[in-house]
Image (cartoon, rainbow, N blue to C red; front, side):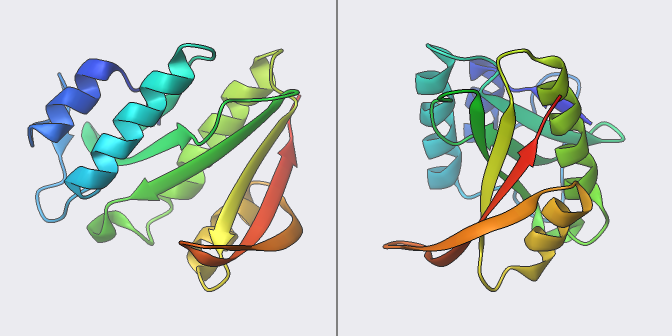
Length: 156
């Protein structure tokens, strides 16, 4: 399931503790501190014009990943990014979380399209999107991340 992430959730994670009523994955980190800080800053910026801006991915009371809006939505398009703790990957959690996110998007009249990008070699993430009805719409080369595949899913 996904739960809207708040500033206090990110503050707790940056201190290395679980947000209220949740447990952290004991055997791997969800994201390195610099990534958590970047996501907290991004969510804070996006939240000024659009909310929710980030979600906690939770299974059985354990915080196992994060999903966020990656840039300020425009024209009904919400661009997302997501990640799951390495020790919890390959168990379907990302697929379930993205399904939950699409259910939210389908119920929100501001959202008509959800987009995402995956590394060209990140087959697992590509399968998550395919299982949720995303279609491949192109490719691009990113200076930091290299070759990326672009995806979209129509909501509503």
